[in-house]
Length: 375
Image (cartoon, rainbow, N blue to C red):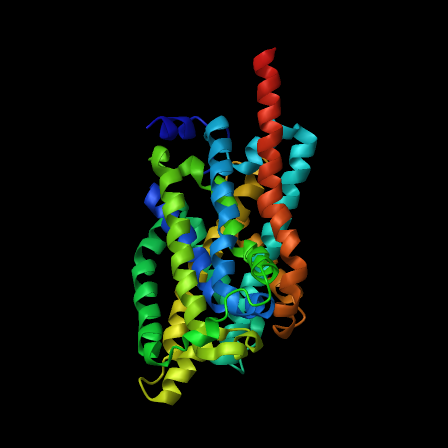
């Protein structure tokens, strides 16, 4: 109740809606899950090999810390998003610069996700459809959700999460007889360094929990948000671990050769004769989850930009930002073939923006609060 009251008194409150802490947890669980299962195995296996499951476990540890940091900042600056309290922490000029850099980072990474969606749909289902058309369709659909506000966005994961989990079961369960545990052995054959490298790459997914700072001011039962965020991350680690292990036990060393490894599991099932047309199930999983993922960061861009510009409404920015996302999706990657090779070099870019910036903000805030208390 206190959190909700603090949120309602926040300056320049552009969002009148609220979500529950469980909706917040499901929102980020589903936002990260599908890209983590479909696109992560290839780059991680290329560095961690059979120890991909170890990378999944240790890679989640920094995310638990980032969740604690983001909630600590939220308690210090209740009712404010990162864009708003960054000026309180760093001062107006530096805070505005950091806020702008974070918005540009979010725009770029959202464009990359849209490109992934477009390439996946083009390669697997619509080879003759231009990428810009596929990108425009998903962005227009997400724009409708973003204009509806945080309450609309918060309801979609409640609807889609059970569907996605059931569809994942339809892919994984028929493959159980074909699991080859030997593909996971020997453990740490090349020492601890390969799984650590894989864990670093996974920060591009797990550290996305840092942007919960844009949603925490609108959580009605704010006292439970930390608990649900931790539950969400734990569930995400378990499901991603299952997805990665199943992929490796079926595909083995071939895992590193596919941009969408999990998609090839569905084709394997079709060839084996268990079911038919399971590619459509993977497409459904991809569409449902990517819609939630794009809506999540699209909303952050619209809300954050409006707060950065001190506007009275973020909805006027939804369509212009949508056009920018489509443009960035075409500029972000030369081709999907270059995606896997670009993941490792971009790892520290993600770690700095999603991990380093919140950590630095918390440290500066703690120092300033400590000095203020002494004075």
